[in-house]
Amino acid sequence: MSILVYTENREGIFKKATFELLSYAKEMAKTLNTNVVALSIGQVENSELEKLGNYGATKVLNTQGNNLSFLDNKLFSKIVTTAVEKEGAQIIIMANNISGKALSPRVSASLKAGLVTGVVGLPSSYEPFVIKKLVFTSKAFSNVKVNSALKVLTFAQNSFGVAEPINAVAHVETFNPQINDVPVKNRLIETNRITGKLLLTDAEIVVSGGRGLKSAENFSLLEELAGVLGAATACSRPVSDEGWRPHSEHVGQTGKIIAPVLYIACGISGAIQHVGGISSSKFIVAINNDKDAPIFEIADYGIVGDFKTVLPEMIAAIKEIKAG
Image 1 (cartoon, rainbow, N blue to C red):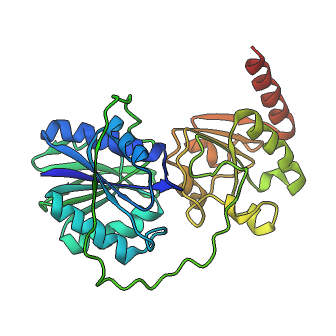
Image 2 (cartoon, one colour):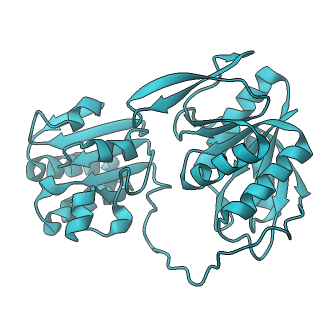
């Protein structure tokens, strides 16, 4: 028995979310007295793969190939299920992101495994297996009992934290499953990447604006705040629909689902669709001149005031702190 963790890389580099997954799996493995196996798909240097040992992986299955540069659900699912069978894994852990949400149902069905999405903590019990997950667009929790021998879990980012690196090197093993029988119907024709900008999904701090900012020009204050904080910028759906900000910055149920350490919402009312995309943030700060705005119900800290007054004062205070 082992725990298999599906790891994701961006251009050959592993990010914090991967290290949190491994830290979580390692803690579970301690209780079960088993080991953690990481599965990497795509072009990643050996030195980068070995780093996964710092966060709990004892072995890394390394699958590379020309047709593995982007997610193909059928193909990747076959690789994951083959790795599970090879390692005798009984628990499969993925991130609760776009990739994890795409792969986990297919892997679960193929293995006849129980599936729990949006997991936020270690199991409260292993026999029977009971674990907590997010429900109702992350507004509540539910304890789920899984009866099947195999279990697939998708883990909500920032729900556990990253363990201190232990200065260990994982054993990297080339893994070449038989996938020639899986037809690849998707082709990557062109990739357009945003450069010189912090990606929303990687950002520790996100500064976001809503329709309450009243115009595209007023987002300059938001950009200045993001600049002094080293943060990414985001927006609500009405803002992107109006063309004030690019659609790539839209966060919410119909946009990007993010989980930064700090999310600053400025001029955002807090509609349920928006909250569903940011509720996994560790800390939420809301700035709004309407004291009854729904965003204050989920915010850890709230500032009632005009953004034209609040933001300059915040920027000045942060600059003063940084200046020492």
